[in-house]
Length: 198
Image (cartoon, rainbow, N blue to C red):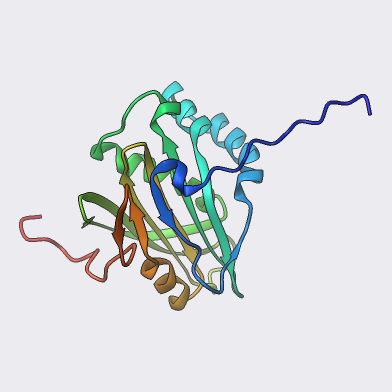
């Protein structure tokens, strides 16, 4: 018993970052936090700037789940500002979202992205949706959706790779609380509608 066992840090909870989002019923929570070090090492090797490396090192995954056959996945990724050492602004959201969706892009080919923006209370949301399929399986249709916002303590992205329309709707229709503001659904039906003047 000479070896000192490392005590794992407690897994972060959404509350640590100022939001609440509960895994929809029928989805099984999975522990993405435990596979995070490998993913981070791989992404860090591809990072182009020190800032990117720092962002990757700070990312936390407080919620992750999977469902069904073909499997659908969802996750939330948070970048706490106290770790990152700076506060992001809305113009940083698309780049952060792109980084958050790097994981699935390693296993799926996505194309035809559409982008939108909407408000949940006082929070501006940035959203992207793309169609895709697992690499080498063009017959399997998937939808990637990433919605991101800036909270008081962190930048957060909610992401799904949905294998069917029902899973996508569950992801979008789940209630979310942002900095104490309750919203009945993460993604409203009009998220991708073009706003006048855009």
